[in-house]
Image (cartoon, rainbow, N blue to C red):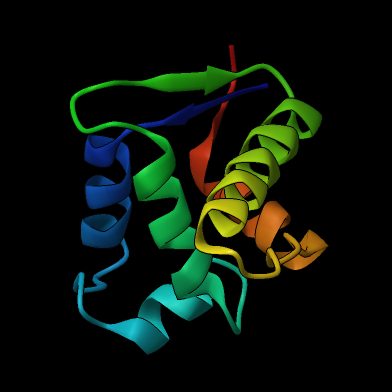
Length: 99
């Protein structure tokens, strides 16, 4: 299974699920529960606008997302959040497509 990330993909996901970009609770639910909104915005920051990122496995996707989180937390001199299995499962379900 391939996983594709772009700003257009994220915008389409919100639209398809009837969630507005400023609906923190709706985005939380869509992206795996509490802190889902945080990971949604992490994905937006991970992928530059106008670009597309594709991963071949959930392991690759987890490593990229957590790596970005670790890097930005170090820049801000704060402890990084840890991507939970529930968030990864939700993100995988939303971004996944059959090859």
